[in-house]
Length: 143
Length: 114
Image (tube, rainbow over all chains, first blue to last red; front, side, top):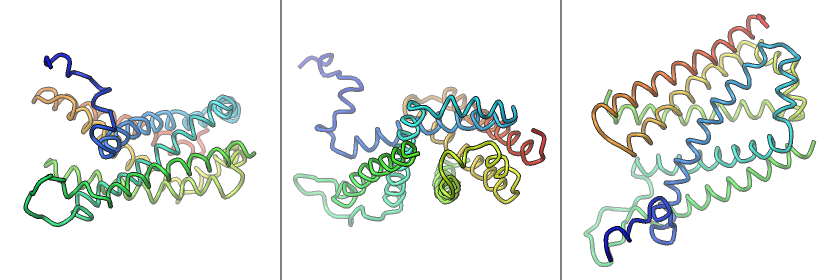
């Protein structure tokens, strides 16, 4: 196959069937991090509206309290929970927790660090993010 | 600064931020979500000094963690001495700017300059 045909770009890189759930977690960690940084900057701007007094604050609250605002907030909750849980997993992995014992590399050369413990951690992060998102939606739309 | 030291700061700020942000979110749930965001309640939160100190700490922790994370992502994408220096100083400037802007809100509201 010519080299050009093997260039699949970001789609190829993100393909979970080829590189496993670890690659998905890597991408989601970065995407959620960038999303949360964007939200954080927006949140700092949003809260500065309190300096405009009650009228300025109420105007801004009206703007973000609609359906779109609640949906964006629920996505932020999901990103926050995934980033936190997966971040704890990554920290533990960097500290050597749950990465297996060093051993001679034998066929089929399965990486010891990509074991079921860390896979469970990644799936747990995704499930917890979904649950937190649902809870957030229930709280915001329940009022 | 050594990258290993920066990563320790990255993880330390993350763990501290998780604990403080949890308190910040729980404050929204002490009463109804919409009620907690009413002007008087938000103003009262800012005027309560321990809470204002906690907001300032969250601001610093998340700005350091967020902009260092952005720096790591940008350096993963492309490398080179000039590029890396530009990214590092750019992220540092963003971090300082955000902390300054957020601190302005916290200090002015806490001191009743609204």
